[in-house]
Figure 1 (cartoon, one colour):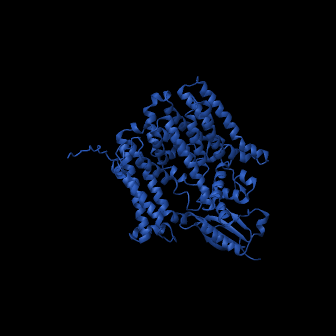
Figure 2 (figure 1 turned 120 degrees about the vertical axis):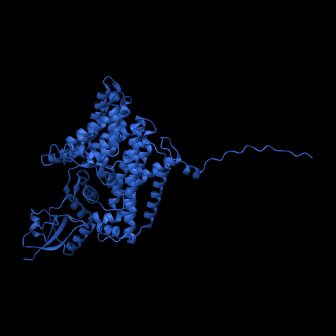
Figure 3 (figure 1 turned 45 degrees about the vertical axis):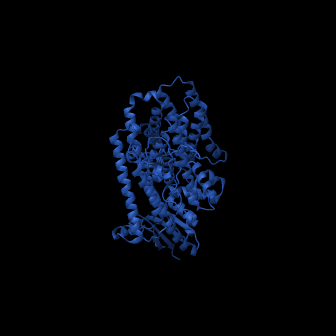
Length: 571
C-alpha cells in the first residue's frame, strides 16, 4: 500500500497588519505610507476645523465682519450687498467678496448653525483653498515630497493660527495669493494656463482686499523675469500681458457695478476699491512702513529663519532656478508693497507666509542637523509644556485640584460655570494620544522637526478649543452686556443716543439685540430717552444733569472698556 506524499505549497509570508504598521518607526522622508498620510490628514483637520464654530463673534475684526454679514442678510437690499455697512452706516475698509462668501455660508448652514458660526465656515473654506494651492505650488516647483512639508510649515506659522479661524477679508486675499502663486509657477512656459490661474487669484485678491494688493501678482511676474534674466522668453511676456488684461477686467467688475447704480463715491473708491489708506488724509497715518518687518521674527516662525538661510546659501544661483526666484520675488515684492501701501496690521502680513513656506519646503532637507535638532527639541518642549498646562488648568477648573490652578482659572473667566463636555474631552484626549504616539515613534531627521512643530501647534490649538472655548467665549463675547442693555431699553421703547460706540460694538448691538444708535448731533437725539456711552472703567464721562445713570457694566473680565447707560430725567 503506497502512501502518496503531496507536496504542500510554500507558506506565504503574512502581509504586515495594522499593528505591525503602528509599531514601526515613522520616517518622515517624503515617501507616502498609510500611517504618515493618516497623521498628515489628522494634523490638517485638527488644525483647520476647531475654532470655526462654537463661539460668538469677537472684536475687533470678527465683530465688524459679522455686523456687515448680518446687514446683508437682514436688510436684504442691493446696496447692503454692494457697500459693506454696519447698522446702516457704510464701512469702506474692504471690497465685499469675503462678506458675500460669509453671508452665503451663513445662510447655507443656518439650519444647523447660528449665523455667526455659519459665516465663519467661509474662513475655513478660504483656508482650505490656501493650503490646497500651496500644496500644488510646492509640488510643481520642487517634487511630490514638497507639498506636505510646505503645508506643515504654513500651519506651523505662529501668526496664522488665530487669524485663520476668524472672520476676516484678509483670508480671501490669502486664498487668492495662493492661487496666483500656483499660476506663476506655470506662467513662463504655459502662458495661457499660468496667466489665467494667476489672474483668477489676483481678481480674488482685488475683490477681497483691494486692487493695490492684487497688483503684487503682476509685479512678482516682472520681478521673476528680472531675476531670471528671462526677457527673451516670448511665452513669459505673453503670459504677463494676459495676466494684466484679465486682472484689469476682473478688478473693474466691482467699481463698474457701483458706478452703474450711482453708488461709487470717492471714499469707497479710495478705501475699498483700491484698498489702501495712502490717498485718504484721514487714514494715511495708519501706514507704518516698518511694522511688518518688526513682527515677522515671531509671526513667521519657524519659516522665516529657514527661508533666510536658504536664500543666503543659494544666493549665487538665484538667477538660474525658478524654485528659488519665485518665493523670494513674492516675499520681497509683497513686503515692500504692503509696507508702503497697506495699513500696519498683522493680518496684512498673512500672504508673506506663503513664499516663506515654499522656500522652507525647498531647503529643509539641507538645513544643518544642529539647527533642525534645536527646532525639534524646542517645539517638543514648548508645545508639550503648553499642552500639559492646558490639561492641568482644565482639570483644576473641573475638580478644584490643584487649588492654585483652580483659583487662576476662576479669575480668568469670572462667573463662568465649568461643566464637563464628554465628547470634546474624549476627542481632546484621543488627539493628545495621537500626538504622543507620533512624537515617540517618529525617526529623528530634519522633516520630523517641522512635522512635530506643526503637530504641536495643532495640539495646543485643539486643546484650547475643545476644553476652553466656552470659557473664552464667556469672557470675549458681547452677548451679555448687549442683551442686558436691550432688556432695560425695550421695557420702555425709545431711541438711543450712542456716544463713542466703536464699530465692533455697534455691530454686536445690532446683531444680538437689533439695536441701532442715534448720532448725538442729529435732530432725533433731542427726543431720545436713553443714551449709551462707551468709555473706560477709570474715567467717568461728563454728562448733563438731565441724564441719570441707569446701568453700567462690561464683558466679564474686561479691564478697560465700560458701557454706561443713561436715562433722560423727566422734565
